[in-house]
Image (tube, rainbow, N blue to C red; front, side, top):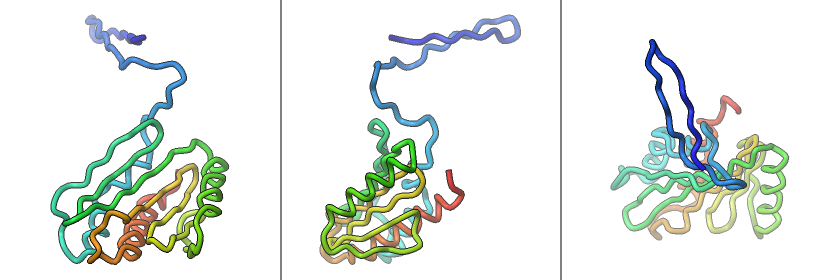
Length: 164
């Protein structure tokens, strides 16, 4: 089904054809701070952690209510994913489930509403209605995965300081 919108501007009629909608489909938020995981501030933090520029631009995209940004590294990649869960309660429940599922995690105090790092260097954090995952698993073996993920997390939390 396509939706139509019409407006009269100075005697002329403007008709807009809006994108098709699918009943019950999860739609990406019109504007969400989740996409800030692909901001230059985060890229700068990743490059500073690596001590070298990235070989190409980071790429971000929505899939439903999840935004993923992939940072290309020489010989690998760093992937940041944010689920926009609509409420802080839902984000907290998802965070707790991830926390219980991760053995030998290290709590990261003072970052968002909660954050931890797993033994593989991956980080899970939540702030407001957002659940963030920083996955350095595909980073090359010469990279300090824990440090790289932590640098990205701190930069994202810096972007999100304004709250939602």
